[in-house]
Every structure is written in structure tokens, then in C-alpha cells.
Image (cartoon, rainbow, N blue to C red):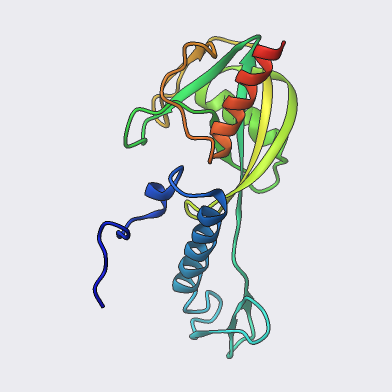
Length: 201
């Protein structure tokens, strides 16, 4: 079958981000997560036997020890720290291109989302936050995260990037922003929302 290269091309999820409708990106992200999950759970982690797709539900089942494994989601927090109109944006040391975003981190066992938020901020940029406001959530298929978005008010401390995960971090005014994520990501949505409310205030 001939493929029109002007209409179709092989790509990955990162290249789709911000270039297709949100519903299309969500569908592609869900498909990618489920394919990765099936690939990574071909064998039982308890007894080593081969797993099979379960009938009637989205699970991989072990015929030997009867273990059932369901798609795993890793919860993360992502937070935009504000100080008046300014927002704290950071450049991740692993970003493939210059991009400044809000801070994020995985929730560890035994932590609440709020505990994680305060710990990650302290570890990554050395500041403390005060009031926390929940914003929303987003499924993020890189590879299987659920991002819980927050705003947090700056409380104290000097911005000191850890230089391991965070290469640099600074305060930015809405009218003088560096390159930031698109609004198809929750990071971009947090930034855009803060910019809008500073204009209205």
C-alpha cells in the first residue's frame, strides 16, 4: 500500500504533543501505555510463568499462581510556585532542548501529594512553600504518570537548584517568559492560568 508521506509520518508521542487535538493525544497516550504494560508483563513477577491477557477485564493473568496484574499508574505532583505575579520556572537538566517549566516529582510510598510537593520543592530548588491550591490532573504517558497539578505560594528560602535534576531555576514575570511547555500539558496550563489571573488582578 502506498503511503502519502505528505499526510502521514512515523513519529513518537513527544512529537505529537501540542500538534494534534487533545483527544487524539489522549487516545495515542492511552494506547502507548497499554502496549508498554503488556510488553513489560509477559511473565509473572511472583513465579516466573508466562502471563496471558485475562478474559473480560484489562489485566494480565498468571495461569500458574493466579496472580493478576493491572495497568500501573505512577502518581506525580507538578507545582507552579508563585511570588506575587512572578512564577518560579526551572530547566530540567535532562530536557533535550531549552525549556522552562514548573517543578514535578513522583509520590513515594507513604506520602500524601502535599508531602511530596513540599519535599520535591525543597530538594530541587531549596525553598519552602506556604499555601497550596489544587489545580487539576492530567494523564501523562511518559511513560505512565498521573500528574496532579498545584499552585503553591512561595514562603522562604533562596532559589538553589540541585544541579542534578535542575540545571537552573529563576523567577519570571508573565510578560518576560522563557520558552515554556505548550498548553496541551498541565505544566503549560498552570503557567497560562497564572498569567491570565495576574492580568485580571
